[in-house]
Length: 259
Image: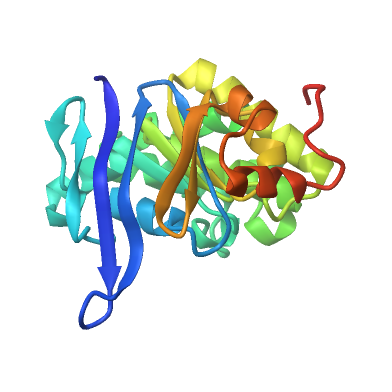
């Protein structure tokens, strides 16, 4: 397949490997597709993301990229840059990916330049992508602390997209925002997916937002996949008791209308 495929990932911690973080996790994200990875804290979502980014090594299992074995935890040097070009991450806290002392446009430009664009082309790319995420000249010339929470998250998304990645991991990327700003960011992500052809792995505990971004979803519970399928089906007719419990915990239920 054209995209990322995870097969039977297992990750244990502890001297004897007695703490199981992931137990046989499998899923696939097609190029240009969007998959929701759903679960509460401790379910294994962030461990999965760290393995995909090469920050953790799985105990067993494999990853395929475009059908070819892919081991991001083994790469170094130039290969590390290539890995970063293909997969970026947007965190819940944009300060994790933005230099607080650097103007937003310079942060976006620096990312593009680091990954091979000339200074001129990197600046043009930065201006283009900031425009795509809805940040104008004033916001681009500002440092992160001068922006609102939603604007900072837009800047973090722009920095991630500056290198034209094939996939972006969104790790609770809207969890810290209020509902109205969440709606703006989720609409933006959908627009960027169409414009840039990027694929998403949307990590969240919030089923009220996952429906607006993803086509399919995987539900994790204690490191195991307990349910998978089209997002609309999982949210309307969940099979597993854990998924039903997550849905029941959403205040007011899952809204029917689109943002």
